[in-house]
Image (cartoon, rainbow, N blue to C red; front, side):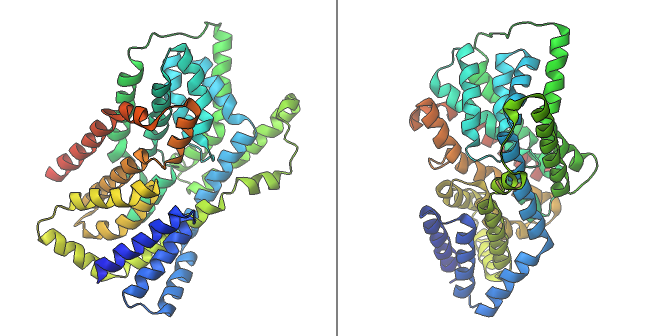
Length: 414
């Protein structure tokens, strides 16, 4: 019965998402259905919903994601992001290095259509390197998403760390070789053989000015990261400092150049930046997690499968494909599989390895999904067919996944 209830509730979630229902609401409905099918009373469901919404972890996670969306919106609205990339290009003096780093930097922000923002940067630099359109599209996507394995402010990383109960640096350290592999392979397959077109040389004074501009316009991101990493501030507090620095930058810009004057009330701009659907998604994820945690039969069923000789890794891989490919998102894979799989780990290090396996598997199926929004926008911008884009993934993605498996196996043998 428990496996039927799980499959049925998952099918309902996938159906609702396919009908453009917010993933958060879909997970709430799926969680309620799962509870009912496993004999839970309506009072229990209502109480779980209320308690989850009141949980400090839920509140902190929702606020953090909300502040990230506001920061990204402000940096976009105030033209801070564009000037940061321009300063980076001047500072590096290399089209190759700039085209590698720029999509990643832009990808650190939760801006709707963010992949579309980095497309013009990749297009301009790609012309200097004489890159074909399909390779430009692959560069925009690979170099944008490689950072998502290790970026502390990535919603997927934040969710994985919170649900797994991990130390963020333990999780990032474990996944660092995966991200590094993706970037190294991207450089080898996409950029290594390109003839370098260096930017025009300029005086030391101009070079130092470009460094100053890059630090200035990347300061909202740097402050948000350093506040948490160096001073141990909660991410949501650190993000408030990043948001304030964006506002102060705009106030400074308005005094020096009318081009950056935004004729809009500040509170309205902040309100527009708050992406409530993403906040609701987090609440739905936490509710689903708590419901699953209370259904012991799920763990008993999984243990039964393992006792029959079915490898846990095969279960994770198949489940990640079923969840993340059709939903085109890493988060649902993490949200649904973490509460089911991680309790099976005998110790913290094994739990970390399970977390990495689920995260990377879910990420890979999300990344190649035809419904992946970044991919859809990039293909449309560069006028590239999906099959031509997939050809550029032929070696990079399998090798990157193999690196994850090697990390998993080596750590399990220790």
